[in-house]
Image (cartoon, rainbow, N blue to C red; front, side):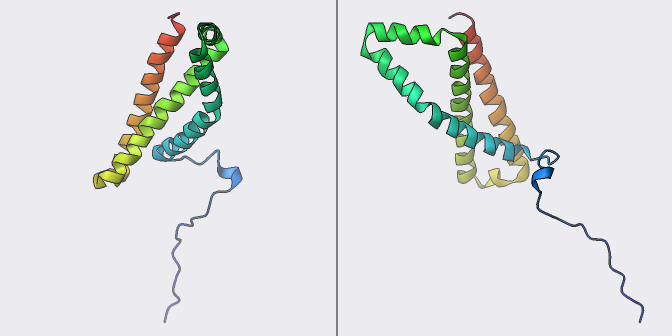
Length: 137
């Protein structure tokens, strides 16, 4: 009886910390990670938003103070990042709800298409807000 020759089979290993930069994640995974980041960002900035909202409703002077602070470039950038977080979190959340409701959205191709649509819609909304925010309005 001839010896059995072993065929070379692919070897799958977990990625290590050194492989992270060379590992190419699927787009759906990137959107999922950004969904978590945007949720954390909204949570972290919530005290700032609540403080500004409270101050703006307390008096006319408080409203003018908040408007003056939001008129500065750094705060406009913070507002733009917060808007991106809201837009992305909303779009990605709707994507997750749709995949829970519709069984056809669970496929690889549908996941990729919905991930692209989340990125496009949230970035277009953020770009439109940036034009409004930085146009002097």
